[in-house]
Image 1 (cartoon, helix red, strand yellow):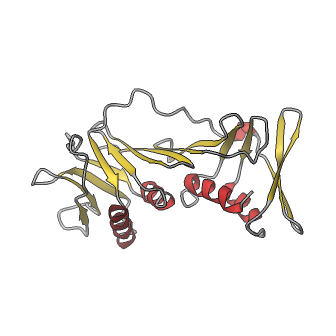
Image 2: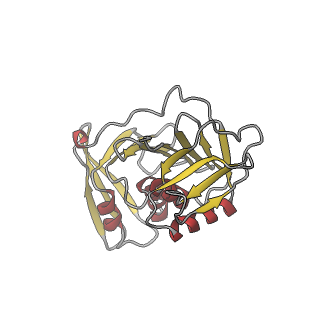
Image 3: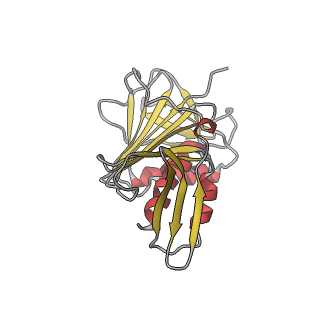
Amino acid sequence: MKKEVLETFIRRYTLGGEINKVKWKYTAADKTLHTRAAADNRAFVADVVMHDFTDFGPDDLTVCIGDTEKIKGMMSPFGEDLNMTINQQGDRILGFTVSDADCESYCTAADPTSIDPVAKNLQDVPEYHVVVPLSEEFLEKFLKARNALKDVASFSVGMNKKGAFEVVIGYATSNSNRIRLVPATDPAKNKLDTALAFPVKNIAEVFKANSDIPGGTLSINSAGISRVYFKSDKYTCTYYQFANKKT
C-alpha cells in the first residue's frame, strides 16, 4: 500500500493532534476504513470514512489505536511503498506490522476498554437553517483570518445589519480586533434566528485537513449545531461542532 493513503486518513481525523485515541473499523465487503471520535468533552465529533480500501485483507476487523501520533512517527522511516500485516491471536487484534525491504515497525493495538465509545452520527438533528458552500476562496480567507487572530478561541455567526449571514472571527467586545466574512450561502438556507459562537480550533483544522476535497459544506442551525461535510470518491467526512454555552 501507499504510505500516503494511511497518512491522509489519519490527517482527516487527528486534526492537528486534537484526536489521538480511536478505533479503525475495517469492513471488507464495503471496502471501507472508518473511524468516529469525539473531542472537547464530546462537544466535537469527527466521522471519517475512507472508501475503496482493501489493504487489511478479506476479513472485517477493528484495530484500536491508543496513540495515533506514535503510529505516525513509526511510519516515518518508510518510503512511499510499504507492506502492512495485521497481527492477531484468535479474534483479538494484537497490532500490525509495517515493513518494506529493509525496515519494519511493529505497532501494538490498544486495549479496547481504554478508548471511550462514541455515539453514532447525531440523530434527530434539527433542520439546518444556513448552508455555506466551502469554496476555495472562503476556506483561504477563513484560515488566514484564524492565523491572523491566533489568540481568538471562537468565531461567531449571525445576521448582519444588512440581513446577510456573516462569520466573525475575533468578536469579544465592541472594541476588539476582528475579521468579518460574508460568505455565499444556499439561497433557500441563509437565515439564523439567533447569533451563535463556536470554538474555532477544530473547525479550522477540519478546513485544512480537507481542503483537497472540493464541494464541502458548512451547515448551521439555530439550535447551536454546526456540521462540516466533505465527500469525494475516496472519502466521506462529517464533523459536528456544538456551539459555546451562553453565559
